[in-house]
Length: 518
Image 1 (cartoon, rainbow, N blue to C red):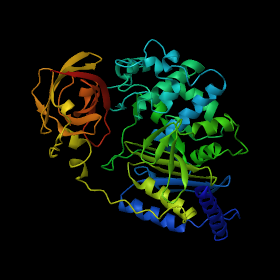
Image 2: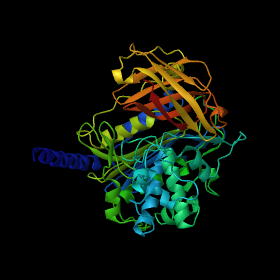
Image 3: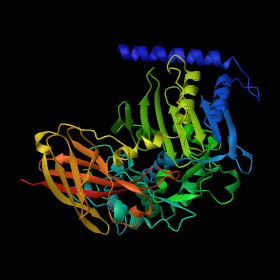
Image 4: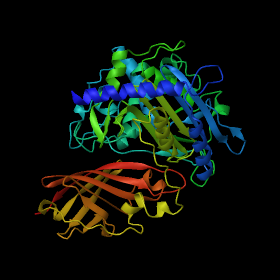
């Protein structure tokens, strides 16, 4: 009860503060707007400091867009400035958009969230291996709780590789690495499966369906799956970490990453999910469905919970957000709405910079300073960071061995297989009581498992090896382990993850199971 009273008091204070802000500035068309001048200045300074090409932002409060603006260059080479109408690659913000399209079919009775996802697929099905794939429902897939693995696979237009048919991707990689509803595990592949389900149920291609049933009814004229015909000139170029333009790329999970949109359109999408009836929008799903999408299904990180396409998060000051971010080669994006405050914020960039989260939080702080602490600017990029962090630690490239004291049930020799679409390979682990782990794949040399650690459930680590598939061997990679201890069995995933490069590579996961030798 006390918490409810405190939250009500905070909301009243936020409302009063926003009323004060409304009186501090006047927009070009005469409406009052908050004073975002300090945020503008911070954006301009940050773009220079980070040598970032551009950023576009949009803010809506109370059913009105109160600020939208672009900064920098959408295309540096052609000197095209960014505006609020520039279309940016959204990366994973595609997920709540795809989930919205999915829910249109759910409301029409064409898809049942609680039926197995395999009921809606074609000849290729999700494979359970050690688990019952029939328990992996559409709801599980949409909430990242089906047990599907980490996955991404990119195809650049200046390379000879092209995206396979979705049935082939499912056949190769849709292998459950945990039981349905056992844990939350973020999977782009799951949203690739959802866009394929949308195609099969609707009878339209995923891009056409989303255009006809989501984008056009919501009046999103600069939103498309991929770069829609006639929209090429309005699209921001994606830039790599070396500041060069990235060739256009595709991937085998469009529903998870393929949508392009402007800040103006995306904040209107956020406003729709706040329940606003904007004049040129048609209500494509009901308020009850919108509410169901934001209902937490599973904790996804400390303080975060995932619903259907949305992450729910409460900021330290008590502001509760419904959000999704996106990041991939030349992309970093943020969409967040605060249903209790009737507000939405969009920040889009055409480079992989951490500035989007910082600027988003700075805008929230500007709107509600009593509820959102002023964020600390991110540290400037270190050109040698990738030599010391991230995947390289699992690869053992210059990383120190992390020793651990394993529980007795983990010590010993383990033998089994890692299964690929070309067939299985023998996999062996030797774990001593000092916490040293050695691995052997096939007849390759025994190799130290680098960064080996065990949290009481999962054994993790990585080593360099050849898993023998053409998909993996398109890039240099490390094999990253995540195996769960289940009595005398270790099973889970072995993922071929591309080593850091100017271009984002692949994460291709394979099922593995080993048994301890007595």
